[in-house]
Image 1 (tube, rainbow, N blue to C red):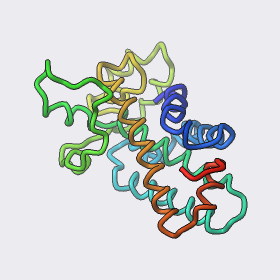
Image 2: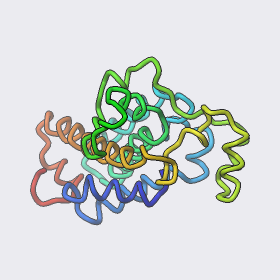
Image 3: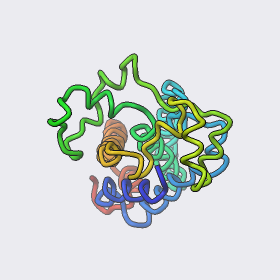
Image 4: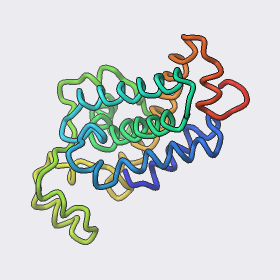
Length: 216
């Protein structure tokens, strides 16, 4: 997704869960995943190129970083940055693979629920044998030049990232569903992480992480 949508998703999902200064660190780390280093050779950052297992491992790696930082009791910023990286990946999942198309197959075309009713955590679809994400081809670099995007999509296969992504509204009717699914998944990841922190009875660590005076 484009940076502006990552920011909007984080704000919608997390603005009541973190202080504004903590949330800004998370958002900056989220958006930084789309820098040159993050875009080259790191399919797990974005669930590109069918890197689902690598993507799930990356999410768990970030969760473990957060828990380790919180347990250490030192500088809390690396934990927030790790959560930013994690949220970027789960948000891109819905924009870079065919999860939403598979979900929509359960409904008649004229009976598709509104975007806010999308099921973002359907395990049957997450484990579906037909789940695919856009492949990265060498010529994909041309898609980063706005006026070349239409030409690039014509010369690339249908399974390319350029043709499969729904990173912005012009990419089709599923874009609002990708936004809503990403909001729900971002909030879910926060709740999952909070449960893991509270399981070890560390309410203070959770307060430090969120920078809120009361637990969430």
